[in-house]
Image (cartoon, rainbow, N blue to C red; front, side, top):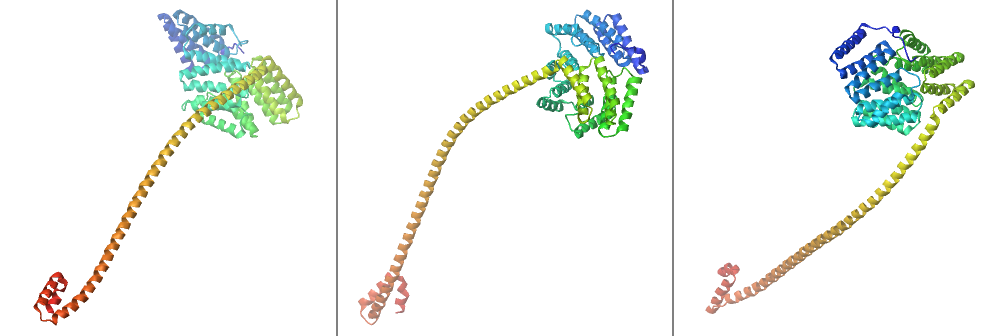
Length: 493
């Protein structure tokens, strides 16, 4: 599957024009000896040849020409960019035995000895992560994705951050690290750019591919979001149709499922056989699912076996492991023990050959150790926080005692003032009452004295009236002067 013939690919007028324009640019830059632009143009041409012609030979030739031009510029970043594109082309073209190549050694040497821009570092570490995933080296893939994630944070590029987190999400799902999976999913939803529809489609398709992690309702909601986002694009036609076929099978819509599978077979195996690298494996997988649903186990096993053979042929241990796990799930409730046993044995052999089992065990140990260390740190932090809280409490208690003492003293002063004020007020009232009593007593005494005087005066006046003595008349006049209240009476008398 590495090298393909371009004759099988049909070229539209628009695509021909794009290729022609790039070729004109290349010729122009050749004449001007503009090696920088020439290298970039060759890379652009290589991408078009891979996209339009599906021609691996021509694509590799263009990248090598780009690399020659880049070396003439003495620009190490441009040279690194060309080498990265060459390595990526090998990965996408499924070149055999590409787990670790001489090109990887060259790229790592350049990284170690030169200052490479962060965007290129991000690309190469993510590419290495993808390669390790393909061969089931999950811990190595995790390391590469963590490095690229840190670079993405440095770049402050939300699209790169979310894109790389989607890769990490897949690793945590394989390693069955639920806590890291949930944390990563939350981060993706926080960083996922609102206007980046393609990235959102990739994210929801990835969630949809975790068939046994979510409930059927939740999984179908992700598919619904994908359909809404992809209404105006055909870029994700194959994975979307594949998920639709699985949806139809899950909901007993077998006719719709078969129709969708046949559409994929006709489009991606007959009309455009080079458009999707692993199309044949996925289509065999869908046929196996369909015949299992129809209880036609011999036919299902035939397609399942063919899919596994294709995985071996195309060197895709990752897809093979996924198929084996899926088969174990499907045959769990069936009486096909032989198929289940063979699948389990193949899975064990695969995991042993890729060191997947020991890696997962080691990862779990490291994760447990890390959790223990984190717990210890939390305990130390809690103890520290408790001591700080005690000191704060003591200070608060001192402040409370001082405030309480001051408050009590203030209340005592207020009480003393109020008590003194009430005492003065009470004493004032008592003095006023005594004064009123004195006035009342004197008033009574004065009134009673007058009454006695009146009686005496009356008797005296009668005596004087009966007398003709002049001295008594003078005495009468004086008495009238002493008390004006009796003037009138004396006058009449």
